[in-house]
Length: 114
Image (cartoon, rainbow, N blue to C red; front, side, top):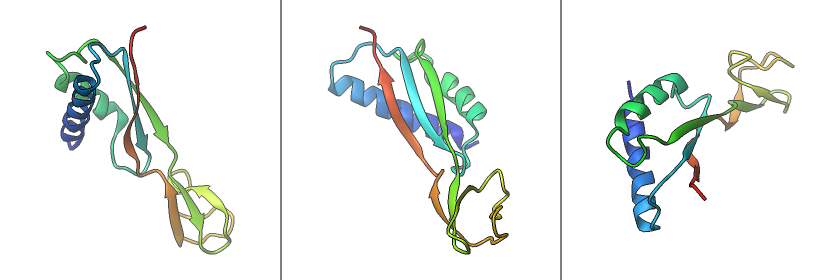
C-alpha cells in the first residue's frame, strides 16, 4: 500500500509549511488526487488517519478532490475520460491518446481556523 508513504510525505510537507508560517492549527487539508495516479482515495484516508496520529493534524479533516483522468484522442482530437471509457475513445474507437490530466497528487489547500 503505497498510500501510506504518500500520506507520510504529504503530512511532513503540511507540518513543515505550518511551522515555517507560524500556523498552529489546521481545520482541513485538501488533497488533489488524479484518477490515473494509482492512489485509492479510501486507502489514502486510512493511511492519513493512521499517519497523522499524535500530530497537530490529528483532528484535522481530510478532503480528497479527485481529478478526472482525461485524454486527448490522437485519432479524432476529442477529449474523453480515459477511466470511464477503459482507454478507448468513445467517438472513434482509437486507443491512441495524450493524457491531459489525472496523474495529480497535490496538497491543494489548507484551511485554518479564523
